[in-house]
Amino acid sequence: MEGFLKLKQESIFQNKSFMLLLMGQIVSNLGNAVHSVAVSWFIMNTVGKELSGTYMGIFGACVLIPYIICGPLSGVYVDRISRKKIIVGTDLIRGSLIVLLGGLVYLNIYPMISLFTITFLSALFGSFFNPAVDASIPNIVAEKDLTQANSLNGMSRQLTWIIGGAISGFLYYKLGIIGIFLVNGISFILSGISETFIKLPHVKKESNESSSFWSDFKGGVKYVKNQKTLMRVMVFSLVLNFIYSPIFQIVFPKTLKFTLDMGAREYGILQSLFPVGAMLGMVALSSFKVLQDNHRVVKLAILIQSIFFIGFGIPIISTMLDHLGNSNVYILYCILAVLLMICNAFINIPFFTALQKKVPDEYRGRFFGLLNTLSQGIVPIGLGFYGFISDLVLPSVIFIGSGIVALLMGVWIIGTTDFKEIL
Image (cartoon, rainbow, N blue to C red; front, side):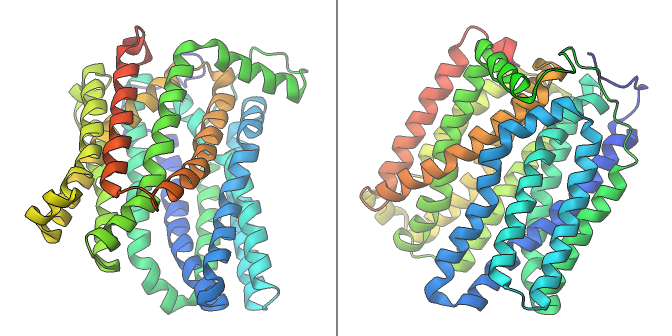
């Protein structure tokens, strides 16, 4: 494939460029995980109970909006200029911004405005970083190692969020919010420094170098529209994002609190099991070649994932709940959470790897920029929809109904004539 480095027959762990990129992301993602949890406590301690919800909503919007607005545009730059410069530059800039935030909060210079402004700017540069990384991995990893590389990359993200979430409370009380900002900022800077040693080729594009930004942007959109296979995958992904993310952000915690009468401790334990399940799935994909590039495994995982999702609704039907009891349903939820995310890994990693292979290098940045934007943009719509119906409809009905929709979408994507071609 064009754009690959001439790689020796070596283990992916001997691929210095990939390992530098991976380690850089682990350092910065760990700082980010600690940062995200600590900011919530900082906001609540600063503005109090009455306004904390509003301010946390504004913080969330500052994280999300730049990805929605700039995602497709950032992909154009990823395809036009050096991806290595984007990766290194955005990490260094984000690190400097967050260190600056620590200084502004320390000096008590409009701490909330400073937080929102720098969060927005940091997310803006992050919208360039992610498509650049996604588009670059196929350039530094041999095609046979792509599935393993994506599995390791995904595992690192899940692991850092588990560890970051676990230690954030301790670090917040030991270092304070200013210390957290400094740790996060320095982690980005260290990540950027390590990424300067990555050997990433600047691939010559087939498009006219003198072409305008907007013509490149429209060319990327036209390419995606003309690829029926890619369009099907995007529709499938968007529908699942519309269903899964909002349900586990809104319906799931309400079910635990009001239906199962569980507290924050039980909710935290259950939340930590989702990334554990994802990691187990990624470890299996990374370790066993028989699971890689196997469309039958993906097909089975798509169907089983939907069935597990329906399984969250059946035990909380009133008659079933009375028979099983709250504690037993909670244990069942813990098991389902792990199994669901194992299946999710068996779907996401092969699809993501297939897209990296299928999309030509000259369009890859624009494609992943567009995909990231649509994936992020569909979530607020889903949050509004499920937030509304969760106050009107029983959670058992929501889980079962949404699971059936996911199952039908799975049957549709599996039944397409080019399902094998996708993978």
